[in-house]
Amino acid sequence: MYAFGLCIDRHYLTPGLAAITSLADSLTPAARRSAALRVLTMDLPTAHALLLAHLAKRCGFGSFDLAYRPPLSMSLMADDAYITITTYLRFEFTPDFVRRPYLIYVDADTHVRDDITSPLSVLRPGQIGAAADEFNPAVGESPALPGAADRWPDWRGRPYYNAGMLWTHTADIPAMRHGVARALSQHRAHILHNDQDALNLWLLRTGLVHPVPSRFNQFETGRFLERGEWVRRVVRRPLRPDPSAALVHFVGPEKPWTPTCPPTEDVRDYRAHLRTTSRHMRRLGAVGAWR
Image (cartoon, rainbow, N blue to C red; front, side, top):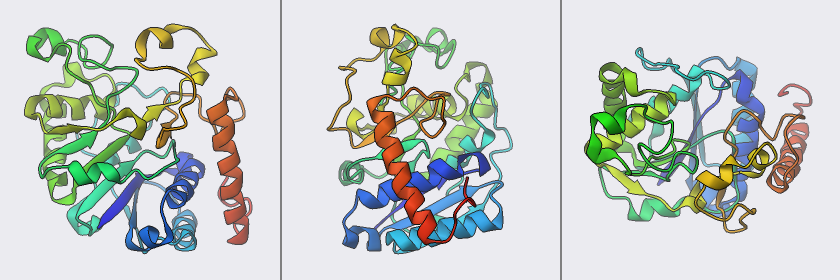
C-alpha cells in the first residue's frame, strides 16, 4: 500500500539507521510486512547500502530498495551551514522506484513515536500532505521565501510548510518534481531555505496541499530554548515535550546523535532509541562499521 522514503548520505548514516528502526517500532508486524522502504543516496559506499538492506530485513519490512540519484540540475544551496545537497533528493523518488500507491517521505533527523500513516486516508489525488513549519509558520512573517509576500501580496499570512515529512500519491511525485524545478529556475530570488522554499513556492501557486496536524511533524524545541527565548515568540503551541507527538523532528544544526547537543528530554529519548539501534547493528555484525 505505501512506502517510506528516506534520503541518506554518508554524513547521515547513523540517524538514517535510527529512523528506520523507529519507523519499524511504530508499526505492527503485519503493517511492517506490507510496507516498503525506499532509500535514495548520492554517495553511500556499497557496504553501507548493504547494511541498510540487512537492517530493513531484520526490522521486518516487506520490501527494500536503494538507488543512487543526482539532485535536480538547478538545485540551489542558499543555506548550506549544516545541510547538504542531498536534501534535494526528496524530489527524485519515481513511481517505478517506489512501486507502491503512496509514498511517505521522512527526514533522517526524526524520531518516529507513533503511526504516521493515517494522513494518507484523507489525502485526495493531486494533493501533497505536509505540516506547517513551526519556526516559519506563515509567509511574510519569517525569513522564509524572502520578498515573496511583497511580490504576491495575497500570499502574506498563508501557511508555510516544512518539507521534512511529506505524504503523497506516488502518481503525483512527477508533478511535484516539475513544480519544484520550475520554482528554482524562475524564482531563485525568493529561495533561502533551499528545496523547502522551492516546494512552498509550488504549493502556494497551485494550492495542492493538504494540511497535516503538527503532531506528525513536531519540532524539538528544548535545544533552542537553552540558547535563547526567541522560540517562545515564534512557536504557536506549548513548548514542553508532547507525549502525543507521532514524530519529533530535530531541525537545526545541533543533532541528538552528536555529543555536544543539549541533553533535553527528547534528546535523551532519542539517544535511548539510538542505543537500541546499536544493538541491532551488533547483532548484524556491524560493530563500528556504521559510525
